[in-house]
Length: 296
Image (cartoon, rainbow, N blue to C red; front, top):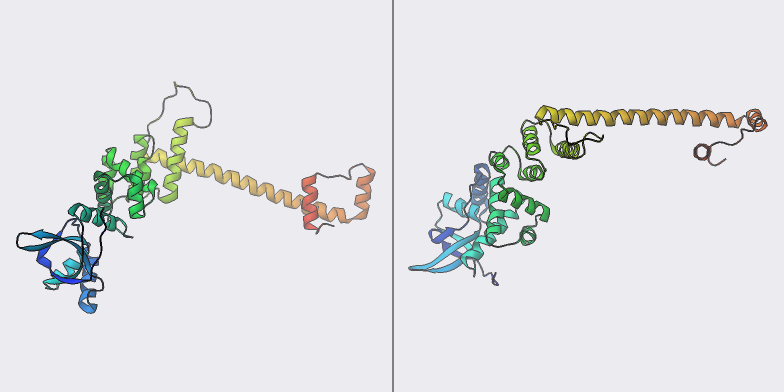
């Protein structure tokens, strides 16, 4: 991309501007832009690139579609703009990068813009660097687009799942798992960390079985949303049982430690232990006693 030197803002005719990367606007957000400009004026000029036309200069919009449309809504014919020197291709790429760098963007716009940069020869690391998106995320989106994940793409398009979750689901090794996880998410059965935990658990069970040696003759059951939820809940219940056992063991150890501490204060009891050759106790227990008695 060639060097581009920004100039001072100029008033240019809006009917001479072409939006090279148009996008659908959220009407509520658009009304806020219109009202803000009507009340306070334009805080930041739009950015355009000039090119020669048959009857005068023409302009390709680099950024500021919302501001441009707001000016049109307010009945204006000219708008302040910073004019840069850039080719139409550069304008399109800059527009894609600026849209991707926004904190909030529609899922379809995100998919389209990353795809647009990829089609124009930019590598995944270059896209990540230009847009401040993580390389893992960019790679996931590209994989989602190139691997024909039609169900996931339709789910993203319909707003049922965000792009980030679609990318995570697409990384599952089995297409059946992908479909089940998608249904579980859409039905609000698993969300966030639980969804990813369930994905990892099911993949581990499919690869290694239920923890016991399995043979090739073992028939793998087909998955369903219900079986996925049941598998996840069973794993949670096992961990809860383990936690209860650990808590009970800790409480018993605390009881024994406190009982011994009180007994060892009694000199007669200590003398009896020595006489019976029982004056030593396990090191771990001795350390606990020393901690509770301040090393005495």
